[in-house]
Length: 572
Image 1 (cartoon, rainbow, N blue to C red):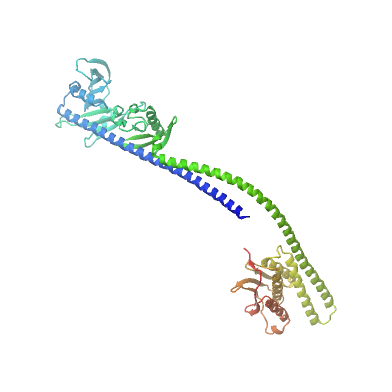
Image 2: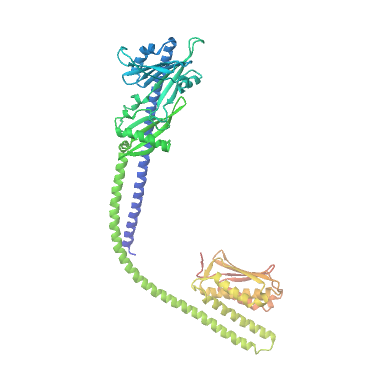
């Protein structure tokens, strides 16, 4: 490959890498922007919740203080009838639009009630425990009490059976008690606050004063000081019913978002922010519990997602710039890809030419390998012919000792032929795996001695060493001579035994081949015995490999050959 090709490929792959990084950065940045929008939405919703809760606290505190003032006023007028209290309660109801009903009941069930009928009229109810019907009378809220209208009487309901009555009695410190009113069948709930009123003396009957509050009539909860086209908040109960009025929200879409957010929260019951959509607008909502005297209500804050677009304008501009940069890089990458296609076509032509040359070279190497195997095969065949001639010659000899030595020489020729036979049977003659080579030799030797030495076991370890074929021939002859000696002389009795062969690396570039058996060991006259020639041959071959040969006897015989070889490598 030329320098221009390498440079072009480097630029191409560098551009691809930069493009991948840019795409990853754009994706990561968009995720960060989205995450930041969620965080900003949660912070904004929490802020709206905080403002709304402050207003709720102020409203509940103000109504509680008004209830306490009315309780003190009633304490001074223990026997007042409902009509006698109208001069006080009419202006009170005019200045408190959120209060829709005032009721006072004593311990005997005597009830006096003033209820807001419309924005301009009131209804006054009076009844006692012995009455079967309420006496109802309509009076104007504004102006003078000049005219009143009698209403049909309605069935009397004992106030002592009402929740607000019982809750006030249960309060141990005679404080005002809030209660969520309204049944499940109505669309909107209301709040009731009541307080126990003790008489001046123990003989005076106690009374309970109750205000019924419709928070939907309160303008303080509409967040008018905030841009209501972006933010809104509402008070809801556990069933998602509105306690504050969405009609006070100027934007009808935001009012619808409040109602949908409450309905969706009833299904999800999530304490974390969640999303909803109305038409083509997206909103974020958050609902948190709000406790009022043990009553669990919920504050729901809603914001338009368009407000977040203003806060993340800079991030979105950076993302847009990155998208444009990625688009330019895609164009550049396409141009470079077309250029590389043309360059690759030229390279393929060169590769086809190189492949043809490689095939010719591989053919030549294959022919050389076949020739090398043929040489080993012919050497093995020639050695077998020599062995056969020696075998015929030995049959003509009469003396036992001479004939025995003659056959030993013939056996060494057979061993050399075995080395060549196993060698040309290997797959790769350039790097001979000693493990495969020695395993084949020792299996053949064990087969030769199987009749008398069938109980002898063996093992070969070569430390994954690989050598050239010339060194393999010398090592193979060494190996066969030493292993053959162990099979022939180490185990005179058929009691079993073991031959262990190990090739180990030694410091300084040397290698050690150990042939160890657990046989009878070397005898005292071994130096002049019949096996001395074989060890002389081993010593001579070791010198050819720039090594040495040593023997040790300790619970068997250990033959150690130190040698150096060229062209060696460690198989992985």
